[in-house]
Image (cartoon, rainbow, N blue to C red; front, side):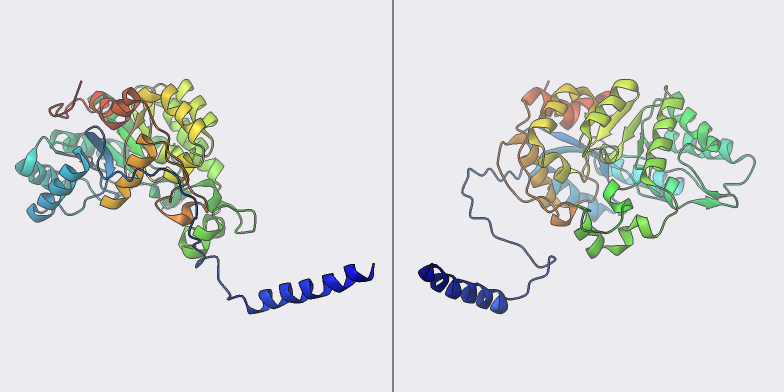
Length: 364
């Protein structure tokens, strides 16, 4: 046994020395370079023309629109639908629609927002619906509702819920004019959970503490999502586009059940590449099954970030970087969607539910 003991001692000493001298690296700094060598297809242009239904462009000056058209041409984006985050109703809508029509009416369209002023006025609902109708007549083709609705808005009685009935005239006006409502409710589930070692969004909470909902709200993710789904069910004649897959990209079975139950609901893919790319087989099956119910949207505008969407949807590449590592500390994988599915996601579904968009430039 003596040789065994003699051999073990230096191994322990070397291991201890290596640990003591290793540089300290925080999780924020840790960015290992993969040694994996597999085929890569780094796409910079979509296979088919596409419509971005979820894009925020506050600036609609001629110079900005000129640059957007150059970017769109390079990406194969045929139409950009401008959906202001907040405060984009009334005069803003009229000015934006005019500016975009003057530049190229076939390439741009705009949504409007709800006018949230004087919420406790007894006639608020009728007044907000009237403003919406005026915006539709001015050229708005949809209504965009941001996450402040349900999370950040209060009146004298407290938090205003997503399914608050005072807004029913607004949803009914959308149904009357057959314009869709793109609604962003809540944030990813992990951002509402404790910032502990079990939370896969820990890095995001560390880098962006303002997104830590568990420490700054007195409501839950489950409450918000239940209110949203109640809203969808109560207004079956209104078309709703559930932005960011309704933050159910990590539970596609539940999202599929929602789509099965409520035919007036669609899903949009902005900011969820990390969720889809970590489950490529399940996500591909989901896209094939619900190809008629999914719309392409990017959300925050960045030309290079579109490339990740193209690679995710159009290739079968393995183990590549997501758009932002803090959305999940993992790599993603391509879904390799069939052409007929790509066409529906990229443009056919949008042309169907936004019937005033020009179909020029799209293949059959």
